[in-house]
Image 1 (cartoon, rainbow, N blue to C red):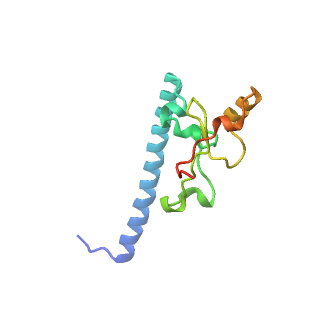
Image 2 (tube, rainbow, N blue to C red; image 1 turned 30 degrees about the vertical axis):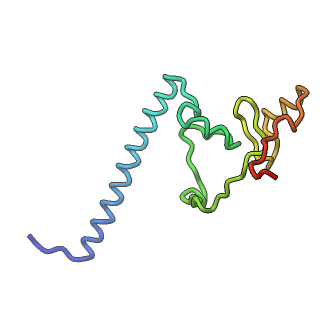
Image 3 (cartoon, helix red, strand yellow; image 1 turned 135 degrees about the horizontal axis):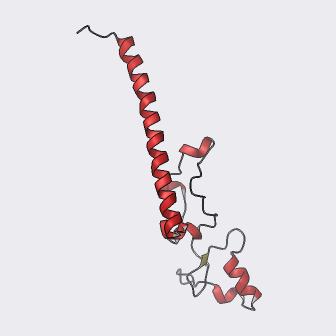
Length: 128
């Protein structure tokens, strides 16, 4: 058995990496297809799949099969980068709002029905 050169081994590595990527893409496509079929069959929602956290962030749920693109696709914020903002408003159904950004739909609807924003204010824990 002849000894392989470094260049031959590196070429083989490149070929195997390409083959591995093709196999990976095929397997992912199969998994996504099975997941989409199960979602359709059982009528699942994003809340069923990811819990109530998926809806409370104020972002629309991602469509099944959508892919992240662009420079930020592979990057995630570290846990230290985010600050926890205290909740300032809460209703009897557990909906919350920090007071930042646009008013959420549940609060706008409650205010349109005659409620006052002070009715939803959360008492601060600082005791002042």
